[in-house]
Image (tube, rainbow, N blue to C red):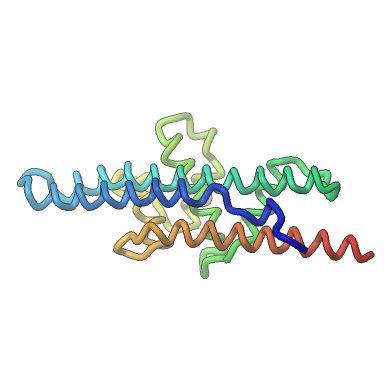
Length: 191
């Protein structure tokens, strides 16, 4: 069988571009800390938290596009499940690699970091699930110096924040979802 549209990753290149821009911004923040005396560790972390948050929001947007692409594929191929979009998203997010000992997947953490960044100034009842996920990751949200995006970036990308790893994580997650979806369709066809 030939290449199917669902197998083409239309959204990865824009994500890579955003991540490259964020990495450039992080280098500028680091350079500024070397050049400006008053630009200390707290300023570095405050600025970095913004940039990392943007990276997580971009990765989350990619993940939402993946969920939409697969859901549309299932609908057009006639193998649609009768689950809500929210239930499908949760199922897809839970299908990723779990981080030991956190019992969270990498994409669940990306999603939580993005939601934290977007909503941390809003009413806490809007991001209750996000807060719970971040607490499971060992982040004390009561600590004003917790820097949740930096913490998640360290967990997923190493202490040096090699953010291209975010692209690798979501690309691998997408590839697995596509393989599983197509294998399920083929198995249903054989029945």
